[in-house]
Length: 333
Image (tube, rainbow, N blue to C red; front, side, top):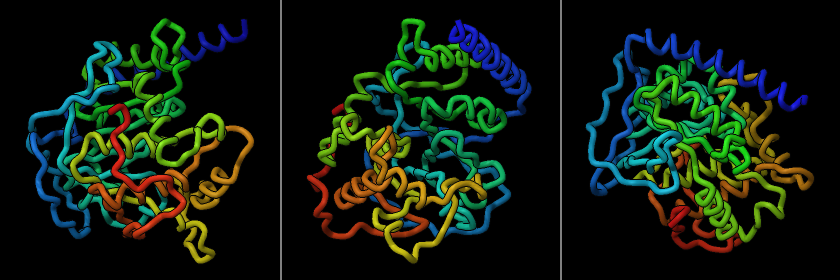
């Protein structure tokens, strides 16, 4: 009985939030977000652009080009596969490493800009840019995204939203509460581009983690982070990936590392390295393995077109702790 009452109250709250969002959305003067565009063929990697002061001019949208079909990411209403491809991507983390970086204009010059969960750009444009082509969102962040109405509004018309979550949240038989809420959101705001990661694709991400680390996610009481999903998606989507705000795997093990907040938009929040080390060392309950994931990303960057900025670093030649150093296949291949 309590569960039904809770679900009913949650439904009323979500409907109220989404309805308010629709009213604002319908009165919006226009889109401030750049489109996610694509290229039919790879081009040579562009030289890195120097960061500059934030321009007052609206970022130019890259030319729309033919798209590629990405299997395993399906529309919540039509169940069609996502079609998207980018020559260059800026993958913007939520790290406090970005505070004061003045990388915003550099980020906005990328063909596609990828963000995570409810990380805002408004008020932080000088450091993180203002365009959003793709936003990867955890099931647990849905309510926060709905509360960030203006941020969602600004990105809604051209931004692709990909939600991930366990099958219990995403099931389509009426019992998947996240899936049900996303369908409602799509019905009220039909122009939103809302996708979910299929169950079979989620299993592929688990398999990829085990293949690269030798660790079974479930046995080790681990949850893959949104960063893991975002990087793996970017491997399928982008010809070149420029990652902003991601530290190297051994960064937090140094006693001299600077202290920055876990999120750039929560300056009084927990320390980033404290969060990484706590999760990495925890064995009771389910935790993210942030440092293990970054070790995999560094391994991938040795053979793939992945580059790290703010801080700027290049992976060491060899990482002996990893099971493999070969070029990984995208999840689901």
